[in-house]
Length: 260
Figure 1 (tube, rainbow, N blue to C red):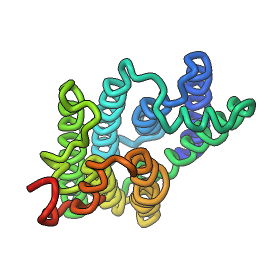
Figure 2: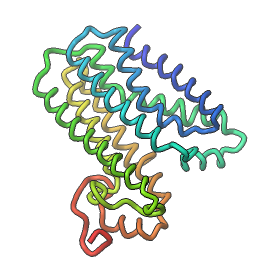
Figure 3: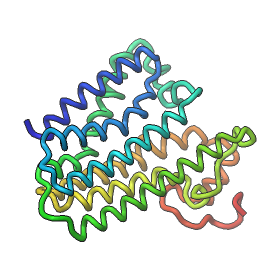
């Protein structure tokens, strides 16, 4: 068995189990909690079953574990007392009687397929890690640290903002959120470029570029920014916020608006 087949089998079993749990809870948004843990499972199963013990394999799996566990804990805390996320509720209403099979295929199996592709750098490193650690690995770690820090701080600032009852119905516009409307998404995209640089030393490592490119595409065009901002498109504060703050890349806000 190779790492790719092992990952497919593991993700199929894992995502099916999460689907059955979601069916029981009537909450498909638990897939967001399961998302980060799936990468941890792929990484550690590959390392323990097929890994050679190469330092690059350990480095990749440890970085993914730190990211995946933090993300899962953050989303779990964010979900407390809120029920099913609005995006999944909307699909539940739209899909009606077809909710079961469409949830299985269009949420859980699709998510599993995305995870397989995004986790490609880790799989490539486990399959054939290449030579000793070098400059690309150092660059990858530095990029990962920057992206991870940006994402984690952005998420922490948002949780703190929402925990204050005075902010109910308001849009966060301070901290990292002053410079980008989605610091967590920006950090997420950046850290996967870091993983890509580490994987470049692996055999066929150039194929790892699928991972950061796919993440950026999903965040910018599909399930990230477009879906989230559609929820707030008529919010007066958000209209002003959007007019002066970059959606993705951090930069100083335009003058003459709400952050002055």
